[in-house]
Image (cartoon, rainbow, N blue to C red):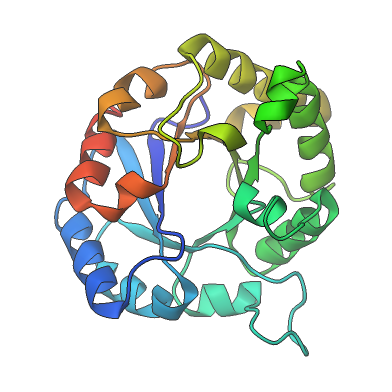
Length: 250
């Protein structure tokens, strides 16, 4: 396992206006000191600073949902890694399937964003995962290997700067999950692939499982070897559910 504590990260996606986001952050922060895990919430960019302030003084960390690869420039609507950091974040999600498949982001662009995130002092949560068609074709492990090779920078990748989130695309927001054996095979393959590329350093990189993790299945998923935490979608929008998942990390 990459660390003594698991990381439970909430991806709020395009949800929450300021009042609700602040209230949710405060509710999580009020009970967020959990010995067995670290908590991270990733709100929309519009309320990133407000949520960081609401969680201030607690053990709950805050992250962004994306960043641009450039330091600055004529990129209307985008935010740089330095802006994400300046708003109070310590992490940033990169390469989520909703951006890879919905917005056409390539491995190369995810890699460039990871380089930018590292330069800004952010921990990059790099998402990888296969589609249903790729799984049905028996290509899951090949897809994961390719995404790892293309999405991770050649330098600066270690347990302090980088987390990998395995999210089978077909399980995100669907209520479907792979079997525990399938999760174990995927995570074991990711760890082994990293070890070939990086040597002993690979053991320090956290591997999160994402894709319809919820209170009812969290304990089983978090007990799978090489599952070092979870990247939570819908269940992270409710403090009780999110904290129940965190409690299952014990």
